[in-house]
Length: 221
Image: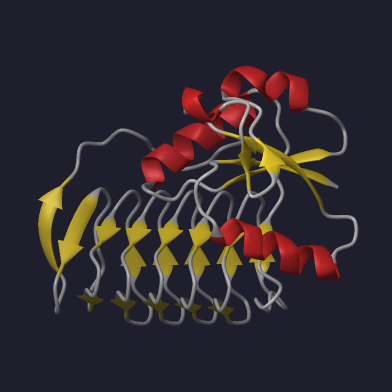
């Protein structure tokens, strides 16, 4: 399997590639695409940067899969993955081997870093990114195009809606629902459901902003 990454920026990608290659002999990095024109033709982590979206059609074949590494906000992650999908790209998961995915229902296009703990009967849909040291407890459902920041704690039987962002070290208590395209700020402690398109901050988390509705969901295909 050949892999093309979108987003030539995070050096941690190199470490993940090395450990995955040790356990998946068929894992082969083809290179990167990045929409920054100054990066085109250069190398990142020893791999070529082919260019931006304009080169995607030339990279597609039966054995090539794509992974989106963009995590700075969920809107950009969703929009860029959607473009790849519309161009006919196939997605694969990029998951650190330290992550136990036994009895986890996984979609495609997910990027999960080292040290993430995912308990049994959890569902992670498509195009979601979960960063180092986060905990996703049993029977939770993580939607499409979600970003869970380092050290976040998602308690059992929690639902995270499409496009939502959970900040660093935030805590979501059990059986709650975080609405789609919502933001839970860093360090927030959520005691009650968060409506769609909202931002909550603090301990206890309080509503501080109602966002403009742009997308109905975070599905990329």
